[in-house]
Length: 242
Image (cartoon, rainbow, N blue to C red):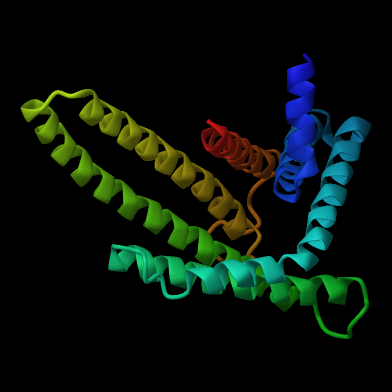
């Protein structure tokens, strides 16, 4: 019990961990609130309260992202043009994704400032632009994971052939590590696809299925993505301390 509490405290003490917990609560509340509102109609006070709670958590995350530009810039600068990346396709997909992510933040900041009446501009087009950039980044992330899976598949075939010649423990360990990487990329694709579905939903009406998702479906997709993110973060931290 104490170990679980300590783990939760450690997650909440880091900005990245706290954001993922808030994100999970945000979408989870929207999921439950949407289900309750769907069953009981607009008369469900609990459903309405959960949807309002979800909206407040979403606003909280938007405000916190006002301070993410510099960290994103530092990451983009350290990656540069991906000279250390062995595969050209991965390199350029990552570079374009970093550009989209870097542009996303100022666009969202302008939209937030307009809604808060700090500046006199229409927020709609800025929200649309920020959502579009987020969607582009997610789409590039999916393509990148697919490319990584293809490269891992090639490596696994080579590893299998090597194992048939030399069935040492080292080759078995390499095969297990490759399988873990494959699983991680598959979950990354599922997470990004869930978020991309929501991103399209938040685009202006008339674009694919924009505006057609009920609250519970948005919450379900977001909760799925958030839980995958929490598991990935826990796994990476566990691997770092092992």
